[in-house]
Image 1 (cartoon, rainbow, N blue to C red):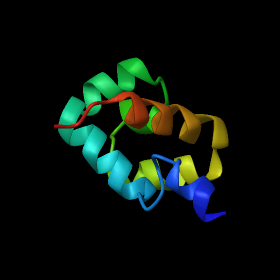
Image 2 (image 1 turned 120 degrees about the horizontal axis):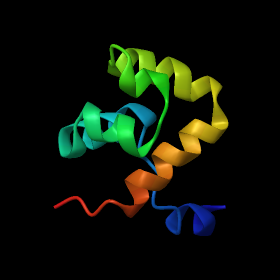
Image 3 (image 1 turned 30 degrees about the vertical axis):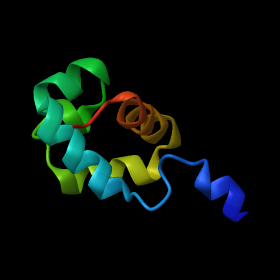
Length: 73
């Protein structure tokens, strides 16, 4: 199991950390365009996004995929 986690780029990264980094890097407007979910487009907040993404696996996957593809420097 440890070997699997070493290859997981999201290991040790919380969903809240992911959202905060994406918002800082792209902003809410771009996130709402690139991933069309209401929590990014209608009165966005980290709290509302966390609530929605924890209940919606397909949306969470899209957010995690965008985070994995983004080269933060």
